[in-house]
Length: 358
Image (tube, rainbow, N blue to C red; front, top):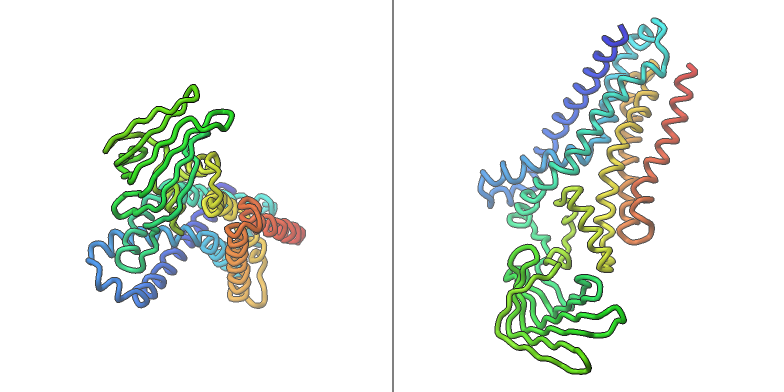
């Protein structure tokens, strides 16, 4: 019997979750079309449908997955309680802890789906969506940089006076090589440098000075293909670059930038922690939603849904505020992304204990 009830609750939970997503996305599409109508008119219809909407809708749904989870739990649990189905389940000898199991199983499915989407599926889709927005709405892509300096590898420092990403060209380039004693051993200067693919670059009008045995050796030329372990995205950072990286690519990017001593990677670290925190939120908000709505109340379903909306929006707002603090450098990305989960975990434990005593 318990297995039948498990399947029943899981089916209700996930069905309500999907229904709430579809319903809210339909509303979002209407508002989005109304707000961005001028941009949609300028863009080809095929690009609007396949490059924008088909990539925007999964992105939006995944961003607000905690909200959908919370609403789904409160909606269908309040309905079960209102029909006295919860009382009937508990009267068979089922404990409150056992009743919670199918809820957590459903939350595990949502959590796994949320993580897989945010870590592997949505980032490549975001590339198309963001390119569409940069082309037909407002271009937020950073295409120019000045006074660029970065550590290519330990003991190797690169500098460019300016870089134009439209032509893939940097100007007044230099590359200094130091030994373990921080003594300059080689310097390459060039009037310009052009990026090809990955780590492949071409320098023009270059001069290489090697310093060995207290002597200077000079090599000049008009063009040389060379491999340098950096690319434009390492120093031209747009506000949504982190959303376009899969989790393995994001981890590698953060590791490489830390190794180079680059300091402006907070938003990349925040994005990495956010993906894990949002996954954990599915369990926390499921417990809170279930314990709030498991008992039949005078206000009925409307009161429970109202409380749920306040709590879920406060969670999202709280996470947004702490995220801003982390990007500003006021706190670490790990602390910023996990503080909301920690606080709401305490709320979940308190509510669970109160509900279990009823």
